[in-house]
Image (cartoon, rainbow, N blue to C red; front, side):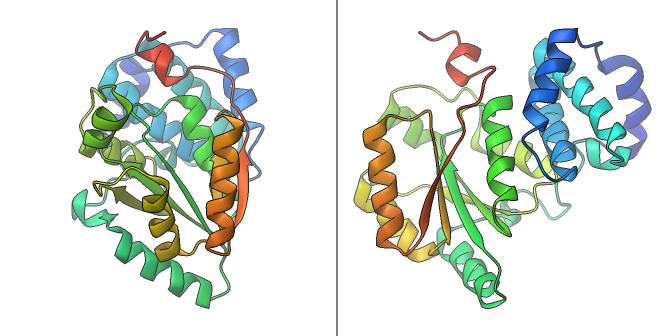
Length: 247
């Protein structure tokens, strides 16, 4: 990813002037945050995707978020996507068993642990905003990313991006929770119940955009492992299906 010497290059050549509509979108997304560092993480994460994809909307939205971050007193280095750890991606993407240990240690310190998971074929501004909304509702957020092969096999759609690229976007943002892979072969409720029983989060996050029957199923899963279920808001803006021009 980026090094500090690249900042001047980005500001001079990469950032695109956002339209008033894009600036309004940036404000609407960030108005949901109570912590100003969430703006920095959103900006850095979307900037990483903009660099990968070259997408105009991501570039303009990143610029609007960059300006908002500066207004909120965030230092430039936190607004840029150079946070990938030097010891490599895989050393910072943990299996379920390891994050369950992290969760236990955190709870022993009276920290509130949340768990949110999804396919995230492409981290849209809407989906990434909800990750950060969830992060603000707990002391430690564990974010589960479904392996791409599961998305292809069980949802019948292509990810178009490698798993490591999605890991990189999250880590490049400066996300300060734990990132875990969901890679097991079963794709049934019992499989997710097993994950929840191992992690034992205090909060299990879902999304208002999913069908009501799925909401009820996720609430049942949460109850079985002693967690509360919390549905995140349905965000306006670009969605994955729109990015991929799917009906």
